[in-house]
Amino acid sequence: MQTRFRHYLLEQGFVEHEVTTLTSLAKPLELPTRHILMEQGAITDSFYFVLDGLCHASYLTEQGREFSKEFYWEFDWIIGFESLIKQQPSAFLLETLTPCELMCLPIETLKQWRDSHHPIYLKLVETQLMFKENKERFMLLYSPEQRYQLFCENFPDLEQRLSDYQIAAYLGITPVSLSRIKNRSME
Image (cartoon, rainbow, N blue to C red):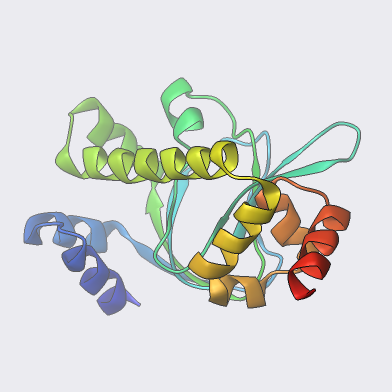
């Protein structure tokens, strides 16, 4: 696992000393399906990098409803920046949807990097910011039908790994709406 993590970091432009720092801090985890990595309302002591598998972050309401925040798959960072910056409990639940191989890093290190304006922290924040802007554009500029088509084009492997309920949650629509969209696309 360490070798794949190291290789990915080098491909992403991390310099050798940053790669050495990250790999020395990272602890490999192999987790089963439906393993809770972080409870909503808990203070986290870790952040993660997905080497293999699929994770899901969701918001749970007091009424028992669940809202999909995000899915994370191979080569994604999972960092709760709001919790980190405001030093508050996590606003979301994080769990594995499949068996996963993750690299677990201490949140304390991330706090130190933030406070010292470390280049690794800046790279992680920039990565997250670009991802969030892309998702915002995706959700605001496209109709549900277009979002589904873009999802299928951009994430064909993910489409096969998620249930229709999960895909609908990612697209911000109901499962019934997704079913209708899929039926219309077959006509």
